[in-house]
Length: 172
Image (cartoon, rainbow, N blue to C red; front, side):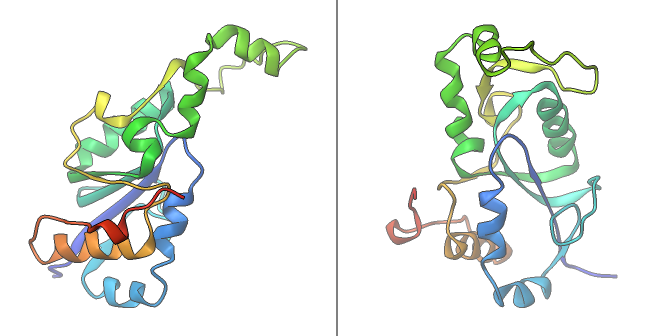
């Protein structure tokens, strides 16, 4: 049996840039795999999440499906980390919040707003994830750098409270 930390990731309303930055830890992934086992993530292509020690979640909440995925993910993860500006404060997708939803959709779809049961119901406002579930940690950035991910994860694996110095926090 393994004593590895079980880690899962998920992306909601965002650009997937935080996941790409995570993958930018490059060869350090090999060292990380010595200490963690990945559940749902781009590394495994697993689509559902089982019980996990650590969940990394990027993206905000723009539709009902995002809320459902977030709640399921929170229930499966002992520790949940809001990763990046979209998860922490809504990020760029929240720029639509200053406009009423219906007129916005009508301007984007002048031939008629799609109305298909396969499409998730849009929320009136894009929301950060802490407004729906408890978040244990936040990893800021747009996106957080690979070095910030590495420092954050190595601190957690060592049993330390993650601390990012000024040089690891940036908003590109």
